[in-house]
Image (spheres, rainbow, N blue to C red):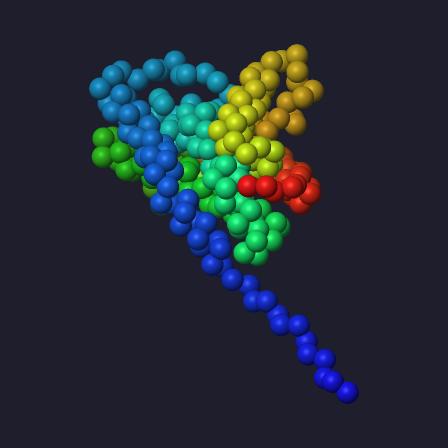
Length: 284
């Protein structure tokens, strides 16, 4: 009687993921995008150095860190994050997410990837992993750039939190890292929506524009009091909650809604991306 041989077990390989991350890193547009994100804190800090600060604040839904910049360069990083989370960081993620699947289809390499074989679920997982990497890297680049130029122009020292408590510079850096991680989760949710949109078209620019418009619309709708019933469900509703990490003690209960909202968006739109892509007829 012939002996039945067990099917070979396929070992997990990170080669595809490493290749995707390397491809994202070497693309000139991604490098230029990161450079632009890093340049904005520098422009902001120089402007604050040569011009009188606005003591009345800038308004809006998030905490105002501009008034503290001249007293401590640490706040340049926070002010830059507050400014960029409104448009520049979402655009960076929209470019990355919009190109994930649609870019491969546009270049004619999507069909080749699926015949390697890679598998559609693995392809989506790797593409989203690349988006998540960008979502966490982008705010970190802004924070590091803002911190360095802030310390150069305004110096450092102990940091006075929004609650009035003063903490050491080391603890303040940990809180800044927490802010970057929180925003990274929020941007990862945006990336999940972008990945879904990227499965709907073969034009990456179309997916990028659609995601950017969706983000702007979410911010606009969040400013309309008559739509307060809709506000808890908006993608950008809790993005400015990162200010809670600059209070003492930190109210983790205030951060939970934002994290749960991001998780819900990630689950829903990754599932939608899988449902769309699994049954899609790939011709390019």
